[in-house]
Image 1 (spheres, rainbow, N blue to C red):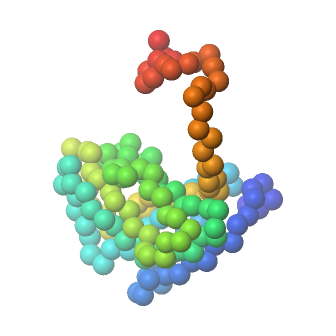
Image 2: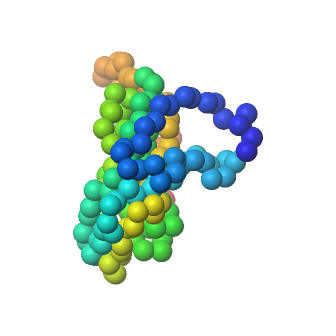
Length: 154
């Protein structure tokens, strides 16, 4: 892969005990934004329709200040089985050192079983900006103005 295409950031990662069999997250294609996260379950977890479960990944990360890890659903799981995440996207802050876990939900009509090593989510590491609010009485005008949900599609 052409490693010169994207800025690089060094992130420390540690595996939980007994997770050496699971691969570390990796970019699967040259232009991929996310890395797949795998289930570190010790036994299969079956999600009935409408049910949710906290799925461990067996990973702990130490992001540098100024970065976050966004945990996102996998489009293939959503399209084929209705599997998504309750809090999509989830955020891992730079000061969090606990295990990365994924809250999966089954929106599909059939039970879905998560097995050890299954790809259950994807992780995107991204820079974060902190805001300095500038309180004002008036905001600048735009072509859209105050139009809300669905406004631009009419």
